Image 1: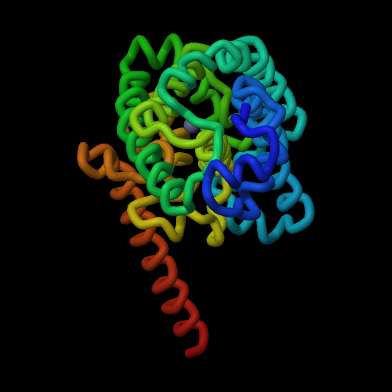
Image 2: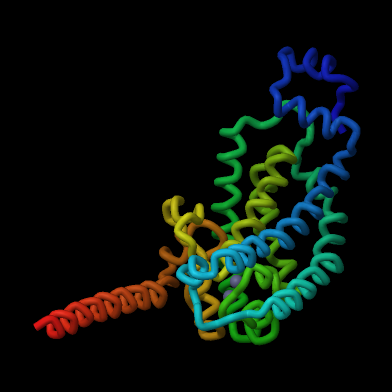
Length: 297
Ligand SMILES: [Zn+2]
Ligand SMILES: [Zn+2]
């Protein structure tokens, strides 16, 4: 809860006028406890997990030809019913496990020093903290994910997430509860090391959810934001990890930068396959031209 009873009091304490964003935050949060503000993470994650995958279904429905041309594994179709079934399973894990953990974890958020008061962080502070969070998440998640590909861990836990060799947005969080729980560790590690404002924290959780769904969407659209981020990769990269399945010792990358796969050489299988596919495409194009030339003669 903010320690000011009015806008004027807040402005007097800060020695300046509030910005537009700060006024909005004041009006919204002044009478809400820190716990209530923190608990916004539950509807936020629920909303993104439910509605973002629908965007891909709508694109598929309205522009089938366009969607088909960017589908990563076009031969595999997952029905709406199957997607709905997997979504219900994800929601069951979310409400029975994740939400109670989130509700109970507020003391740790207070302990690490995530603030709710004014002033709001600058855009530079938000951007630099998010960059740190992503780098920490990438490194930690890489090793946790690799650990889940050890034989026992894979066969008993991670196999659930790999049930879909062609993932869909609804199956993003389709995982054993232990894997689901472990995913939270890297997501909290960054904010613990570089604690910021509650707004940054909620934005971080939203971005984390957003990119995970995009990774599992099954589509490699040219306008996806990851195409414009250096050392990053789109959905096709993680799709390969699912495509190879159990034997996959490749593409452990999560969520933004692929530097760990590059550093530890776990992207070789993927790169070789890309090279091979490019060679095949060149070959079939030159064969097509040759056949056309012979036909014209
Ligand atoms: Zn995996
Ligand atoms: Zn996955």
